[in-house]
Length: 207
Ligand SMILES: [Zn+2]
Image (spheres, rainbow, N blue to C red):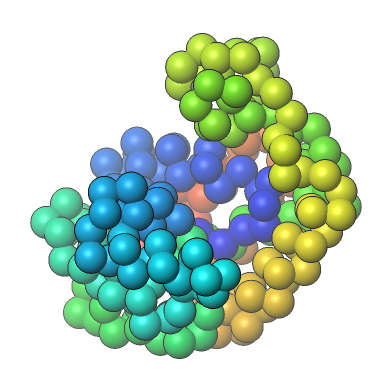
């Protein structure tokens, strides 16, 4: 599973991890959006919660992840993104993976100043919404034009960071002493971060 503030490059690194180990990238945000679009019973439940301005609670999101991890494509491993966000979710995840290979936690660390600097210059594809990575002025997925992200204004960034810090600090305390907790310096070139993550995951898997 991955932790990391907005702007840490989790999307880019997720693509690399998925390719390297041929494992599914399980993004709870994407799964919830798909469920809402597909109009499944869960999707209708989630849509009702969101329309009332509520937060998706631990029980609902834990049920979503539990069902997803029962799919056969997770038998050789998986990459979790966006879950867990709370201690009850982390405890539920420990139960889900009980009896499987140990859970490896990749924490991509970035200073707040670096997050603000990166997000201020972050671009997104105007066609498909994918975050731009690396150089060039075209989307690497669909070739669409890149524009500044609407939600990256400075005050929005500061608020997101505050939420991230409040959510994540308890998780870092929860996982931080485990031999499979890997803190990665995210303030480097994406390829160097990828190399560090691969090395850390391989070492952690042997512990
Ligand atoms: Zn695109």
